[in-house]
Amino acid sequence: MDNTIEWSGPEATITRMNPLAGVPLEEGGAFDGRRVTGYQFLVTTSGQGHAYINLSNVVAPEDRGRVGFVKHSAARGKWETVPFTIEGARYRIPSSGGLYALTLNTLSESRYVDDAVSTFPGWFAGVLDRNSNLRQLANIPASIFEDIAEGLSEVLKRTRLDSIPLEIVHETYRYEMDGLDLIEGLEVKEEKSGVIITLNVTEDLAQLYYDPVGDVVLLDRKRSVMHRLKSDGPIHLQGMIREERVDKVLDGKWTPVFNEFDEIGLQFGLPRLNGEDNGRYRERMETLFTHPGNATKYGIMREVARRTGNFKKVRWVNPYHPLVVHNPMGLNIAREDVSVDGKIMKVSMLPDGGFMIHPTNDPRGHEVVFHWGAEAYTLHPSRFTETGVPSQVDIESYEKWDIAAPVLYGGIRYDRQEWDMVNDESLIETMPELDNKMERWS
Image (cartoon, rainbow, N blue to C red; front, side):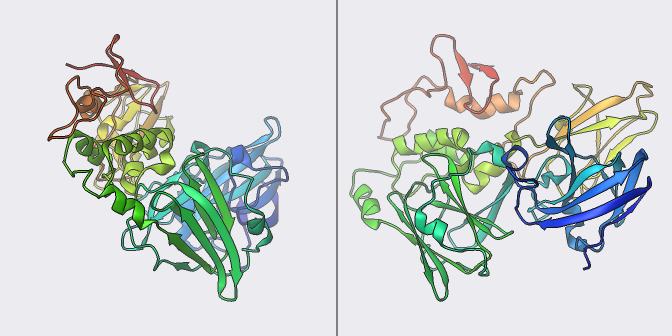
């Protein structure tokens, strides 16, 4: 590839600037704390209208669906999303000149949400499962985490991680990674074979995230902070587990009774850890919403990813013709997720998972908004009515939490008999990650 960007449309001059690989678009920081991967180019034009950009020399064919565009607004002093459509190998964007950037979403598998079409690239998140395979969680925008920790250890700052190819060594991960937390210490040392990172932990293992652009991210549950390690590779990751803690828990003081906590946890893909008592299990269910990075693979897919702005607005300019939205990414879009001017309308679902809205013949046009879930097999999809209030599907899903009797079956009782999110006086139930309040169902 010769890195040539072709432009056709209003007469324009393009200056291709340096390629970006996680580098801020301009000195002093990136847009909203995010970093954009791709190419930055300057367009100078005196015309208005649409431009067609051919990126065949820049973007590999398999990556064309992951492309997005942003333009720098001098008035607002920030980068803003540029709407576009794909026409074969070309991208059609409105052009008025200025500084543009081509963004490449780091998400690669089509069955996951690709938010390059509506927002800036987020973090790729993956986790080692019980078979030591790196599994993708979801494309989670960085805004749901606090700022990246600046206080990395001095040895990490001194270690150059930008010149060695990435290699995950997973033999030491003998236990399932889902739901494990709390980094106690971090040790990094250079070896001839690469860089060895050792995690010393007090509770099982720390969660590990890996960015295919070449970064390894460690999530510190206690501070909800990600430590991002630049690495183009080989990185050997060794997890040290304190098995005596597990043995101590399993000394006869804990009995594996399947109760309502387990039932609730399984709804959100959060199974009880081996030897985990009811108190710890309940805390993890609460932190699933307050600290989304602690959620398991399925918990993030089914609940958290839906709350992170996964929606698209479309202006229906000509309602004399049907509006057709195709779904080549296989996103989880349901009829209830589509609204026209804020109201749910009857739509026809297409074979590819997209939808069609029949003509309304309204000359004023419409604003169409549709949400999507992260996986097509979401067990308990979150639906909202046109007023923004959780629907009956939500309420029925959470109804099991609204109990005044002891919460456990079997011979073990937890010391709290009601879920904290229920106010005893007002009988109002709330979810930690939602502003909406739900009336208690009886």
